[in-house]
Image (cartoon, rainbow, N blue to C red; front, side, top):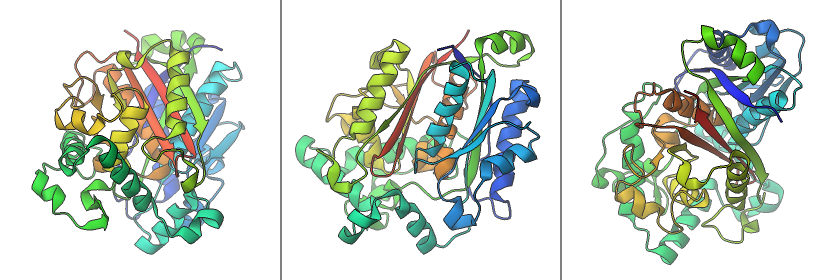
Length: 390
């Protein structure tokens, strides 16, 4: 397999984009990534578009072909991919594989979602398509319910408290204040977090990521093309050391232990092996904090934090920008927002800026970064490892 490099990135803010179509958001991010990459549109050999619920919420499918047409790409394969919340990460992996396999010299991955125009009832119904409703639907368990159970088990086993989990919320909301693309940055106290509206005990409003509109895009190229365009770039290249995808249980009751997601553990192990690095080499990670307790569990599943210590590390400041390992310097899903199909590529966008040393909330000396994108009840997961090229 050939080496793969990120040559260009683009992203909208993750926020409410009233009056903008889903296609226009995707096109804007894609055009920005193409311009930044200096790659000619005729050199792009494939497009992969991550999206989850444009059908039920927008009445629109075939978005990959629509976006490619609007940005002027040639008659190339254009594929929409779906893996619930992991759709963007899967699109990125497919683009990397197309280049690594030698099928194309350049590929573009785009992720997009618009959600804020729909009612809460419509959005909830659409998001619930990410679970096996035939088998799990009769239980009445929702995603907040699933993560609420995970929180209770984690607390019972490891002593994780409200203050520990609030530290995750406070850190990510504070990080969001430094990211102009984040929609819900805030400087919160423990008391304010604990006083927010109850959602599904022990989960409260500030423990949940907000629904969002947004798009992100990444152009990846082969080493041969990277060498040809390097002199004309205004930024350093970032190498894709690994990108792994795994499957977990599609059933709520299919997990052996709710305080760990097998798909994350397996994807991380495969990514470390591909990249030839260990968890200790990771300087920063953008991980899937759809709920605050998810960051605690994810950080442990990725091997970045000892099992049972995720909440403690957050509370001690060890996952802050200047901590042992910086987690969600962008603000994560909790502050940046979660336009489902765009989230995974938004994570790649943020880590790429960190490895270029141009992030507004910069991790000093950042050299190797990771992204983690988890879908549904843990049914789909991608983990990618990136390295800055000096």
